[in-house]
Amino acid sequence: MNEWITGPRDDASERRRRVVAAALRAAYAWSVRRRFPLAMREVAMMTGVVMEVHGPGRGPASPAALIDCLRAPLGELPVFDGSSDDEDSAIADAVLLDRHDRMTPEVDDLICEYALPLAGTFAAEAWLPTWTRMHADHIRQQAFASLIETRSQEDYVASRKFLIDHPAGSREELAELVSTMGVRVVFRGYTEIPAERRYHVNPDTQWWWPCPVCAWPMSVAGRTVRCRYRPHTSVFRIVSGKTSLSRPGLTAVDEGPRATRPEARPVRDAVCLDAGVWRFVVVPGASELRLCRALEEQGAEVRLWPELDSYDLYVLAGEDTFRIDVKEYRSVHRLIADLRAKPPQARVLLPRTHEHQLDAVKAALPSLDMTTETRFRAQVRRALKKEGRTS
Ligand SMILES: [Zn+2]
Image (cartoon, rainbow, N blue to C red; front, top):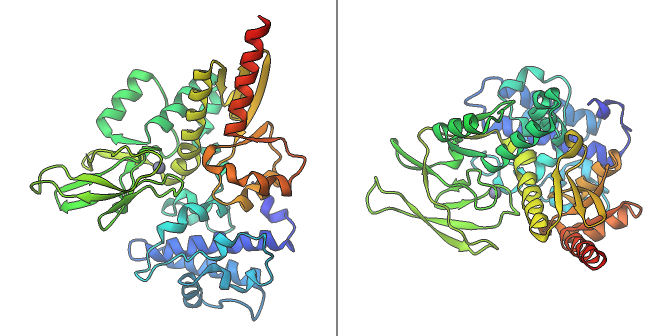
């Protein structure tokens, strides 16, 4: 897990990643500094990381100067000078703090793909959310560490599926499901619905809405409600109930591919998964389960996360078998960097929301075995047909 220490220090893209990771953590710390006294120390430490990457005389040289930079596009930091066209322009354009010094929801789901462990901040772990300080593999490993110890593939799959299908709900409802299904809820488990995902009618009446795709609480900003993960595209507007006690409704602003309108649920007694587990287990998991169910409907046999998560799907279609790793990244550049650093154990599949990344990944990694959801489902269909003819 310390590969970043021994990694090539003169690699410009890795230096930018360190700056982005430090900027992310500084921005988060700044946004919560009134609640957490340790936050200012974190901002100072992250300033140190940014200064060390830039070297003397370049870039922000104090915490206040770093915070100023976080209110402007990241690409203005000197570490991005001379970055080539194929660098990630979405990251260079990202502004982390809005004018009220809150984290901008537009970028946090993108930027968390850049999170990585940085040295010297372990004391901050209790309050710093996982997605600001750990990369995806690390979060997944922690979430499933105790399940993997049991070495039971069946328990592992049941518990992981449970988190994906139930990323939020009422405490009572979840407790009952956990006990009837015999699954294990691990790591940080469930916590209260965070403030930015609640709609306050009055201090005693608050509501939340599950995302139609991932079922995690959507963000509420003013009267606009949407999932923090941008590829889950539906955007809604709140319609107040008849009285302050009645349930508010939603209307779709931007009819995404799914126009299902979720129903408001009371915040009282409701809980949801940690943001890191949501982002790196539930979000990709929603696609993995959707794909698994679609392939099963086609007539294939599918095993999820085989060999305790060596890859995502083992697919048996007629006489053909396939090993599939679903990759769902907002940043195609992070995807390429991660595939280079850790070659996959199976064929890489881009889900339908990410099929447009195929050409960029193929150009960067021409020998990589990869496909898209559309192509793969067609291949499975052919394999099943072939079997139909021969048997
Ligand atoms: Zn969602």
